[in-house]
Length: 322
Image (cartoon, rainbow, N blue to C red; front, side, top):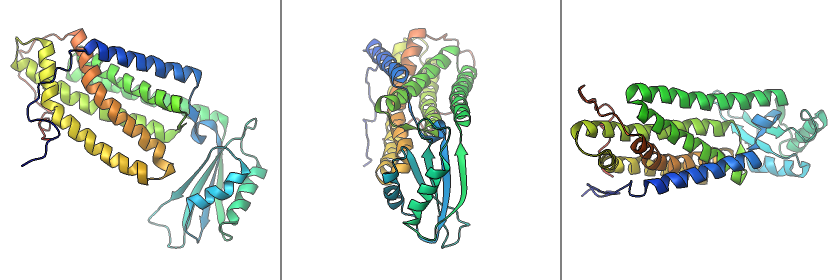
């Protein structure tokens, strides 16, 4: 007896309300974009500028205690992370303390840095500060620009890949689904004012990869079924293909969410923003693979010229039981 998340054969009509799903997606994208324009993003130190202080002590790093002694200084956004390295000695405990630039100042002042160091000495008297580095507003602005370019280039590269592998209609559907995922993820961070830093950019790029993997699996099955059922309407072929890959999609999403949930609960504040972005990305990426990419393909239609032999590359995992 095998555990299944869905029946072995399903016949769900995913496109009975295709216009409704596309309409909901459009509304969510408009709301997300409006939130971005009105509220903006709550940029972290990476994008706002600030100072990074490296600490080293013989006493084990206690992030909570470090944060507690710095709170009275009212420094705003302070990020504290413990640094792990297999080359460190047993009594070598290293942490990175990042402090955002104070309002009206180009960078963190020397007086502020001294106050931070004195506060940390209250936790560990023998603590040392091997390095102090500052990120100015110019560098932060360049990081923001580079982050936008990285996400845009990833989407363009995927557009070219899908266009070469499938037909242009598939490429348009896939890229619109990816754009949908990225905009909604940025919109959630804008609406909830969750700290947005370089880790979130890494999450966005990971979401793009995760979403396109789901979409390619579905599109591979669509192409295979279009060759197999030459006279069947495109809507029926799309429904059949999604139903055939549904078990694999749900199993992948569920197992990924279980791992992310454990990280969200147990991983601490340092990676919570990254994990939240990934959890949201898994949900919205699964949704867009089924209801956005395929719906766009249905609207655009596809030229059914299958004189060439079928290529089933990528389908070997599409029938995993779930």
